[in-house]
Image 1 (cartoon, rainbow, N blue to C red):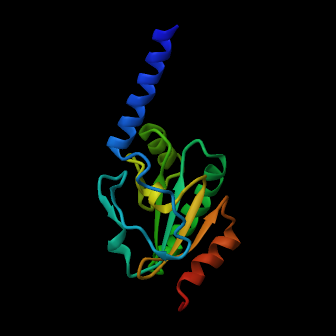
Image 2 (spheres, rainbow, N blue to C red; image 1 turned 60 degrees about the horizontal axis):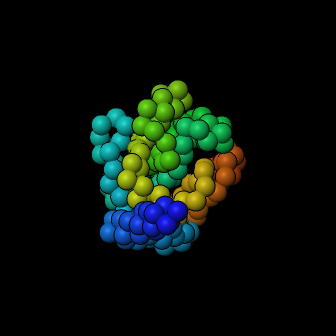
Length: 171
């Protein structure tokens, strides 16, 4: 019995040591509801690289999703339908897959024929920097990479259009 207790304590100490050594807990989920959008550069599903800083001149819809998320599946067609219209107005949409496998994420993007940039956060850094705690979640970013709003939950067309159009207005 004593050996089991000692083994449990040693395993717990090893886990704590590993967590401290690898930086677990260094990223405290934030809520950039207002302020600078945390920068990121990440590989897109099409093989290109998506760098948020390259889109600083226009409004950005940053959308966090997963293939298993039921509301994400409901709103993916809406976001795809609006993408060409808002792209023509100088907007950037980017879908950030999190908490998912690469194969399921790619299948989701194919199934919904997503043509806007779709990326995956395999190192789990971007979602922590943005303070994502649930899905779906969207960030509406003004030109100059200033987060205007964080939206939690399923987007409806009227609300999304209103929020996107508001990004073009002077702050």
